[in-house]
Amino acid sequence: MVLTVSDFDEAERFYRDVLGLEQVADWSSDDGSVVLLEAGRATLELMDEAQAALVDRIEAGRRVSGPVRLAFEVPDSEGTAQRLVEAGAEQVAEPVTPPWGGRSSRVQAPDSMQLTLFTAE
Image (cartoon, rainbow, N blue to C red; front, side, top):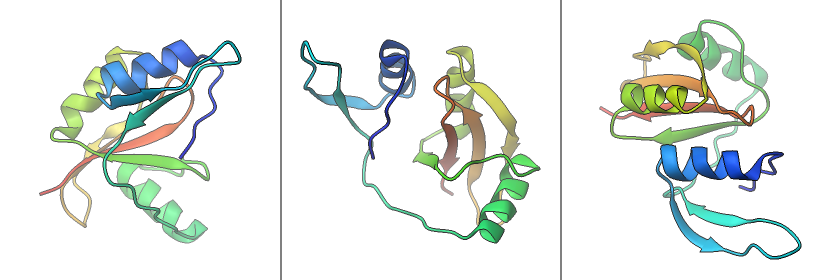
């Protein structure tokens, strides 16, 4: 996944320094800035509008996400969400225990990307 952001320094700080994704490469040049952050094993979850609306209702109480939402498995979803909010993210909803288990927290990053932070059981 590639995110194009208007404030590169803020996005780098947020995803690398606050969320804790490890930087594994920096290909920046005079032409522009780019870093590669390790986010673990990636999966692509495809869902239709009805399922997206259901997940939003469960995790956020209302339909809030756009066509792309990033989900990260973290050891402490609530603690991580709090750190991200303190670093400039917006809390979308209170943490929940969804029917599929674990614990989920929703935030919106400063670049407007919506994130689900989840802790598995």
